[in-house]
Amino acid sequence: MLVLDGKTTAARIRTDIQEAITALRQEGKRAPGLVVLLVGDNPASLVYVRNKEAACQEVGMTSRVLRLPADIAQAALESTIAELNADPEVDGILLQLPLPAGLDAQRCLTCIDPTKDVDGFHPENMGRLVQGLPGLRPCTPAGVMELLRQYAIPLAGKHAVVVGRSTIVGKPMALMLLEAHATVTVCHSRTPDLAAITRQGDILVAAVGSPCLIREGMVAEGAVVVDVGINRTAAGLVGDCDYAALCAKVSAITPVPGGVGPMTIAMLLHNTLTAYYQHTGRTEASCCCSSPCTRTASHPRTAGTTTSASFSPTQNPSTGQMA
Ligand SMILES: NC(=O)c1ccc[n+]([C@@H]2O[C@H](COP(=O)([O-])OP(=O)(O)OC[C@H]3O[C@@H](n4cnc5c(N)ncnc54)[C@H](OP(=O)(O)O)[C@@H]3O)[C@@H](O)[C@H]2O)c1
Image (cartoon, rainbow, N blue to C red; front, side, top):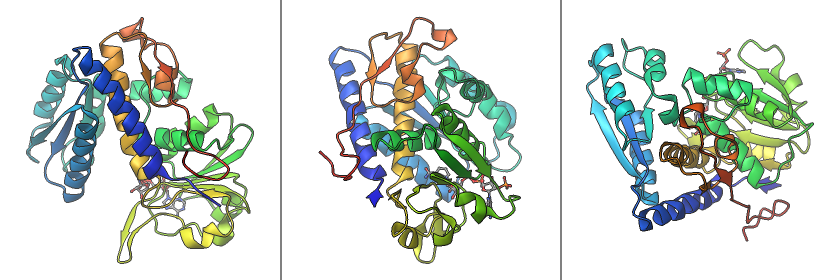
């Protein structure tokens, strides 16, 4: 059984990004810049934002957290976003969700310049994903795809079952698996007999937010299981899968913590670097992974920019050993 080690894989991606930024600085270029908008003082959001800021600093990106009061008016928040859209030093804008009551998150997300939308939630980037066009992809499903790629997990022709249909995880996950030529089934809270479907999955992605929902009898022998769930319980942080029970049955699985979580942050850095390359019109730039935003040609607003993937795995996919 192979443990899909997101912590180690993400660390390697961060090292690649750090090296790319060091090279830019040596050429006298500015560092890529990310601004995180934090509205109010949701304690979980504070932790997430702190982690993102630390990750940016570690790789040499410029990161700034703009803290705004919980009672900020919608119009004021939108004009702050407009200012950041116009700031040439800002490559990525991340609006930390959830927003306090009374603010319209969807309207704010739509205000972000799609070329700075490093979360990949803007309707234009979502539309690009649907159409298979290059664009910034949502970080969590992009992180899952990169992790599967790094471990050379075959997807073409496989049956992938995604449990969860949220806009930030389940739906884009399904689309990315489809883009990789998997046959995809999406399940949700109204799916009758969930186990009958999850048992059909060669690949099973759980993105629900329900501790240990996926039990041993719900997976096929030899399946590859990706656990996106993060649930805080009395026993600590657990995923949506019963990890200990599944280990005996599956061929590969992500742990929680140390699986998808670190990959999400690595993809945020990757998206910010990609946005920087687009904004600065670099044509020869290479990045750390195979996300479609780096593989394919330019965004129409930055025509002329083409980037390519250069990162090759240093891990033996059959043994899980790091080179
Ligand atoms: N690792 C990371 O970096 C990362 C990033 C983002 C999220 N997460 C975690 O991933 C989990 C999902 O996040 P999310 O934002 O997608 O959550 P969400 O918006 O609450 O969506 C949950 C989805 O699960 C479905 N669902 C709920 N109960 C179900 C059940 N019993 N059987 C089948 N489907 C069920 C819901 O169905 P309906 O649509 O019918 O309601 C919904 O589509 C959470 O634990 C979250 O903390 C982790």
